[in-house]
Amino acid sequence: MVIAPHLTVTELEQRYRSAGDPVARSQWQILWLLASGMATAEVARVTGYSVRWIQELARRYREGPDVIGDRRHGNPGAAPY
Image: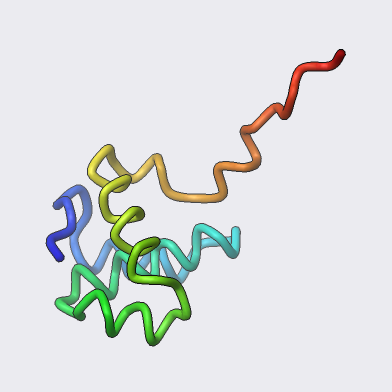
């Protein structure tokens, strides 16, 4: 799987190692492993995430590094009655 070239492999690794949010940390790890040349199935085996989710994350990353992280923090929830 090809990863969008927003960041170098080294920069992806740095983001992974310095991430404070555990969700972002996992996502950066996945992107780093993919960018390093690891096959999607192997990344799934190593990280415990599904191949489908890894592909979705790689697709989302095409928009840029700002989409990485726990998107639930920005979800306001349902409107009050």
